[in-house]
Length: 399
Image (cartoon, rainbow, N blue to C red; front, side):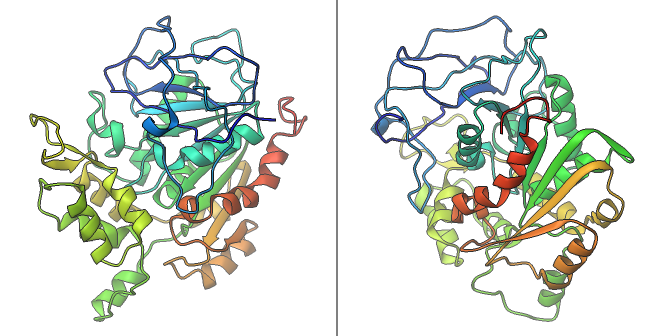
């Protein structure tokens, strides 16, 4: 049994600080560990554990449905530096309790890896709860979480990629990072824009993948998204339930910067008809303006590059992946998750995806932001395939 109930909170550090690797003394328990890197750091720099922090004083990503993980209230995750001199993306590895790989060790093979890729306006923290669930259920696995270009800590990296900004460029960033880490994931999971990014990654292996790979595209369609633009051109009104990223980008671009406080962002997003969880999530992407004192009254701006993100989303709307579906590389297993309240029109596309031999799975009680609306249901949809990928015949990982 695990200890008392609480929240797992993985602290991220500044790009210019070394991440740390620590474990509180006590009995062995099944806990995820985090290897975090958003900047260059010496491979041998292992620091003492930080002091214990009460659950009340540690910020954690809160799920609106109050889903919680059981965890030892006194346990804190491991942290270690990852020796990349110029990482293209800020990232971290969340590891299951049975994983011993430290990133820089060449004597130990990398464990089975899942790569989680967020959508437009997101960040790696958005998918951390899903990552924690995966490594708890699969303690011999690890999950790679990234901030895509123009997002999160990647937007301010000294080695950040320059424009143009699009789906293929984002896929190139990830492949470059994986080469630096010497990882080839068994499972790629991408939400919305991230779904097309992971499809673009495997599309670059034209005939055969180096090893079997599962790709899960969460609430994204394989083709261009021209339908909504056509409705607007015809004078169609916004659907009050439209929680699409394109409309959210429009709302955020209309806000004058700097903002006087987080409440201004909350009010604008709520006033545009988005839900409170989405408004709160948007407000987490605000930071004090550089040069300000950083107090409660400091003016705020976005952590992300909003204009770069708008360019990325235009690329997402224009790009198509049907060629991949009709001629997939050998070793690819492709699945799509359709949110019950999706803003996209799935009808004909869902039938075409299935006829091409790929899976379409309906996630109930979820809008576009599937990992927030129904995280347990999302994991349950993917669980059979994850168990298949973890079968003994696949690198000896127990199911």
